[in-house]
Structures are given as C-alpha cells and as structure tokens.
Image (tube, rainbow over all chains, first blue to last red; front, side, top):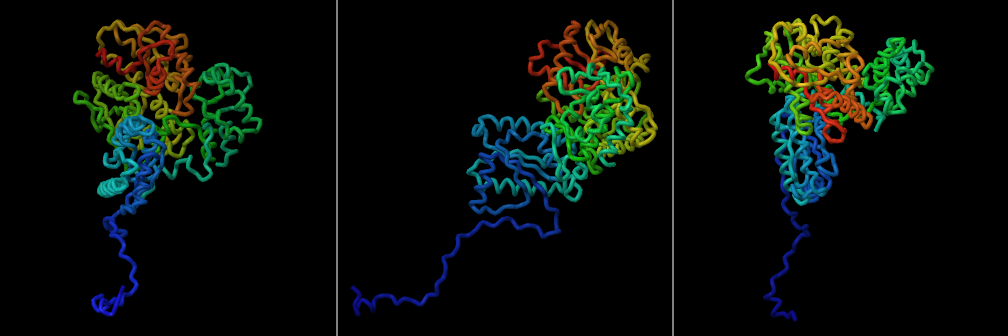
Amino acid sequence: MPTKKTAARRPKAKAKAKVPPKPKTKAKAKPEPKPGAEFVPRIVVFACNWCSYAGADNAGVNRIQYSPHFRVIRTMCSGRVHPSFVLRAFEKGADGVLVSGCHIGDCHYIFGNERAIENFEKTKALVKTLGLEEGRVRLEWISAAEGPRFGQVIDEFIDEVRKLGRSPLAVDGRSPARAKDPGERPGGKRTGT
Amino acid sequence: MDRLSGIAQGIKTSKAYYCLECGKCTASCPVARYNGGFSPRRIVADAIEGSAERLLTDTLLWVCLACGMCRRRCPMDVDFSGFVRSLRTAALRDGYSGLAAHGGALHSLMRMMTSAGMKQDRMWWVTEDLDVGSQGEVLYFVGCLPYFEGLFKPDLGFEPTATARATVRLLNAAGIQPVVDPNERCCGHDLLWSGDEQNFQALAERNVKAIRETGASVVVTACAECASTLRDVYPRYVGALGFEVQHLTELLSDRSGKLSFKKTDRKVTFQDPCRLVRHMGVIEAPRQALGLVPGLELVEMAHSGANATCCGTSAWMNCDQTSKLIQTERIQEAAATGAGTLVTACPKCQIHFRCALSDGKTGAGVEVEDLSVLLASCL
C-alpha cells in the first residue's frame, strides 16, 4: 500500500512523450546502380507451383529485399519447362532465364524435376549453339521454405547477367524477331489446338 | 496485301482455277489417306467458290505436307502445295496458325536467326580430320543440324551432325575443301511453309549475302529442303543468286570420277525426300551416288522415285496421329523390301522416321541412316 514514506523511495515518473516502439531492423537489398548507369537486365523465372513459386512468396511474406528485375511465370512443375519456353523468352528479349523447381526427391509429381534436368540439358545445348553465354540460363532447386535463398539466387543471377550485358538477340530489350512474330499480334488467334 | 487479294493471288499463281474437280489429288494424298476430313479438291473448290475466308481459320489448312503428290497426279498441274502456302501466309497475317511441334522451339530458333547481332557457336561438330575453309569455290551449307543435335540427340539416340561430318569427308575425298560459314542461318524452309514470309525473307537475305562474301560459286547441302529452298525459292525473294546450288547426291554424281569406295555387302532401301524428288525433280542422282559403292544392293520400296511417299511431317506443323500413321506405313514398306537399312537424304526424313520408330509400335523395324554417313563409312 503506497504511503508517504514509500512514496519518497518510489522513483518519480518521468514525463515521457508517447513514442511508438522501434521497428525491427530490415534487411536492405544491395544498392541499385543509378538509373542509366548500367543496363537493367530482364530476367524471366519459371517457378514451379509447389516449391519455387511458394518460395518466392515466402520471400515476399518475410519482406526479403532483393533485386526486382525479373518476371515469374508459374508452372505446375519445373518438368513442364520445355526448351521452347526458354527459347521463347530469349526471342522476346530476355537477358537471362532461371528455371526453378523442387529439390530432387521432393517433387510434388515425384519425378517431374528429373524431367526438368533432361529438358535443361537440351536447353543448354541450344542456347550454346545460338551463341548465348551459358551464364544466361540457370536451373535451381528452391523449396517453399527457402524464401531468403530465393532472394539470394535472384540477386546472384541478376549480377551475373548484368556482367554479361544485354542479350545479343535483344535490341534495346526487344528481340528484332519479336516484332515480326506473326502469332503475337493483338487478337492473335491459334487454330489447331 | 489484304486477305482476299492474297487468296486471289494464290489462286492465280498456283493455277488453281484450272481445277477440274476430278479428285485425283485427294486420292493420292498421304494425309487424306488417314484423315478423312482433309480433301485438297474441296479446299480448292471452296476457295474458288468464295468461302476462302473461312478457309483461313480452318485447322485443315495446316495438315498439308506440301509433298507435291497431288500436283504430280493433277491433270491440270495445279500447284496445290503452293496454294496452301499462300493461304497459310494470309492466315498468319491475320493471326491464325497451326500447331508447331516441340513447343515451337524450332520456329523460335529460326526467327532468332534473323537477328543481325548474333554470333552462333555452331562449328563444334567439325573434328580435326575434316578440312574446311572460310573462302573457296564450294560452300557446304550445313543447315540446322547443330540445333537438331541439341534437341533430338538425347531422345532419338543419334547425332544429326554425323551427317555434316560425313558430308565434309566425302567432299574432301572428292578433292574439295568446302567453305563452312560460322555465320550461316537457317534456310528458312519451315518458316516459308508455315506462312511466315517476312522472317523467311530476312533469312534469305542474310544467307545470300554471307554466301556471296565467301566467293563460293557452288553451294552444296545434304538437306533436300535447304537445296530446294536455296535453289528454287531464294531467287524469287532475293533475285539471281550468283551461285549454283546442288544437293550432295547431285555433286557426288557429277564428281564420281574422283571418288572410290570400298566394297560392302549391305542391302539398303532409299527414301526419296519430297523436296528432292518432286520439288526439284532429282530422281537419279541419289541412285547414282549409292551405285558408286561396289556391292551395295539397293532394293526399291513399292512407292519409290517420283511416287515416293512423304515422311509424314512437314515444317514441324501439326505433327499428329496422321503423321504417325503415314510414317508407320512407310516404315513397314521399307521393312518389306528385306533391306536392313532405310537410307535418307534429308535430315527431316531421318528425324521423323527415327521418332516414329522410337516407341517400338510400328510393327516393323529398320535402321535409319543418312546417305552421306553410309557413303562416308565406305570410303
């Protein structure tokens, strides 16, 4: 029970302004080069629905900061990524393509990621013959829990592609072949499917 | 060119207006044999009667193999394949297309090869023993063999570039150091026949410029499609070539005096490529080339020479059940000759037959080998 005696021993409440609690320190992404200083790579990422896409989502949920210069295309399985998908990306002016799936043994469809490896071998051979540097294509296994690793892989890959420069098949980010690709016109329809 | 005038132009160029509606085209067509819905006669009739616009959206426009059998039988020499090609070009301009096999990978590669800035890495198949140069009288046009190897070697279990090495070996044996150009682009045959004239034009211009820069006066190729396209189609798009184009079998046949082969006891049969036998009219040269090997027995299939059946797939378009049925019948015809090997003179024929054989359900088996590889093995 507070009394006059105990009140003397009680530390006086200091007048404090209402300050909100300090936020946790956020990880900062590596500083981006100034606009116009270097070219900005265009990366296409094929991410499998069950592991890699979820891993990318995990990175977002955990507010991992990493380079934003990529577009994700979700496939149900990394094994769906045929060499034609990667070639199409380069045809449309991509500077680098990352294919990402579940770790071996963990594929949602059991062996789909083994198909991904088979497809990727063909992809590498075609990309090499086209004259594109091998660093422009990469196959990675990223699980749903590996959000930070997704960010890390993207940062590393974008760094590597940045060093390689603009894809020789892209002109100002647009492949000349793309402009003439007849199937891509607005309202383009396909028959026979 | 608007779509109606494109169709009208196609009718004029192919002389489709001469059609008698006799139906011999449909009766000879390998596709119509298995696909009851496909009738060249009806397509021509529809176009002339005026429902050509509906044709442009029709899937059946894309199943024609352009094998030329219809034209061969037509009493009025209507160029139905050419007519289909002009319809496809008009259709594509409107955004309608057939379904390209392998995800359109081959077509992507071809379109990418129109790019000015590319530096391909396509000489890795050249081994130490081969003698090639960068300037000379004879240029070996390799075609897409290096890309076929990347895409098909793992699944079909063979090396398309073996044809390239064998061709150079044969040319060297005939005393020729061929030019092989590291900047060569696809001939564009598949783009042309799938209606993409714009990109075909770009490829034609790049290739002809590059060939002229090497100073070659003769271009030789082991691919019937490249030979037919370079010789007969390029002049329509880039003007007079300034060089001669020969299929390998024509060159070997011409320079047979320089070549000598070891005796063999092999028995083979021969697949006349559509582009060689009907588009170019070259029937005897492959037989003369095979005849240079002492002891090599050539047994002709039931349909051979100008009557040879197509290998079932063209320009990688709409490769389907019908293609497989055509290939199966042809493979059975080859096996029925008793020959152990089906010899091809076009990498497409080889790929399509090997693919058809790969599931083991064709009811018969033969080995498939390119003519250049066979001959080089007998040097």
